[in-house]
Length: 327
Image (cartoon, rainbow, N blue to C red):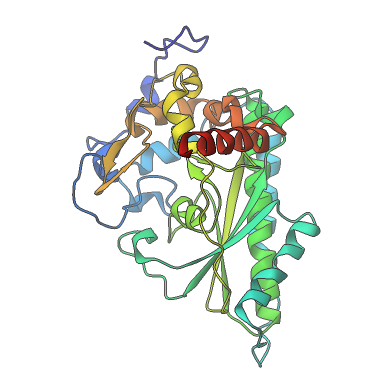
């Protein structure tokens, strides 16, 4: 049984539950399905009318967090979206794939993002009913301010999430604009309403760590406390390989996020989702608390890997343990 929790028991607002559809979000996600298939959009649709949980998504925006940061962040987000990108140069620049990828490090050096990677596009990441024609996806990670996110689920943590979503959107547009100035078409993809693809599996393929028990990526350096932006392009970047640091095994024996989750939406074991065994968050349990707190974020805030400086030390410790086991 989970330990005592200051946010438990949790009772969802009846007005929110009145907006819920009869279909389970877990069913839409493919929980328990043994066959592989493309994902369906379950939440954060650009047009709420396109999804079963559209009214629940609309309800999210009726919650008053009591601080002005949310409204300011939404205004800033619209400014980012409205900002023009560079004109497409007539002649595409030509470079070796490794050189293209190495140039992305400049976005880290300039403080636009904290991590960047590239993956070859896979149809399995693209939402059912949509199409992605580009061959590459660039992923940019922006890290939360731990002092702010650690207050989850208080409104100031939600405001921090929104601020980093804005940074991720800015990173995606900056990278896409640069590529256009180099003569390559590029499409920025921003969360949470990504519209075309699921960014987590793409980021895992691009070297952003491993999937954690809380359903978010755990990266060696960023922990679970970061947001993603993406860019779709055909520019011939060399992919950055996936990595393993023993995080999956660590999650199997750690219960911190399980105990901290108010609606008990996290499972101690992996589950089969669309033919893949993976860590999975119970959508129907998670979303009501998520909505009422304007984003929750407790699980990523309490994750041991999210504490500044802890990740590299943990990874080194797990590597040493793996070496001893292999002897």
